[in-house]
Length: 256
Image 1: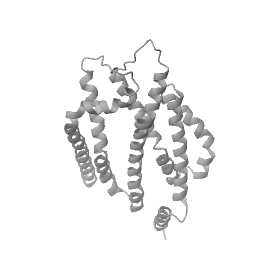
Image 2: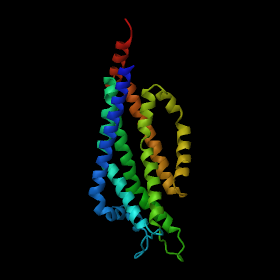
Image 3: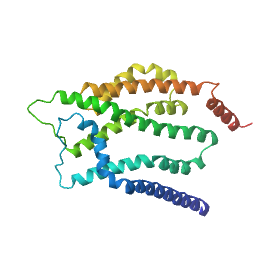
Image 4: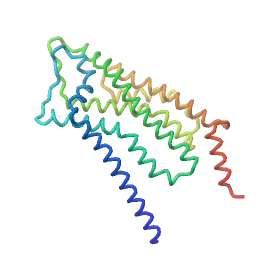
């Protein structure tokens, strides 16, 4: 019992140390970037500013909002920059408890999911925002001058980043479901009609009430679902390296 307790405590200490290192990494980037907090928000607001009438700026309705909103943006950017190191700390903590074939599969999974999430955010920023804001501005009456609040804009941007980032994780979800045996590739192919309907329903819920943003979230979700099916099918083939490794491990685990 004492040995078990010591092992458990040692794991807790290691977890604490790795969490502390991850937090320190984020704080280091945060301190470095703070002098440019305003510039970071300006960069984030650029898609909106490009659609506003010339000479129009955003507004801040709160007393401390002009300070806290750029700070939140800086913290978000710091987390993204420190994300590789944060994921390394998480991987270093769980890797010793995994089998060799699980480590071989887990590392690409972590890296792939991270890159896909960032790709989803980039897709949203560089392509979706411009089209959505122009579409909304086209419906604005000429008798008003749009002046978005910076806090509401940040909330909207964070929601859209999260929605598109998670959408780009669809291939990872599909591959994981197939690899753990929860569902087969054939069953997922049969579910295509439901996935298409579900994609448009989810897009209608999480995006603004305009056709463009809903379409631009639903279509990548469907395409990435097909990509996940292709990758999962390739990995499930007997000739694939990962499938062969898993079969060898399963065979070794069988009693003589």
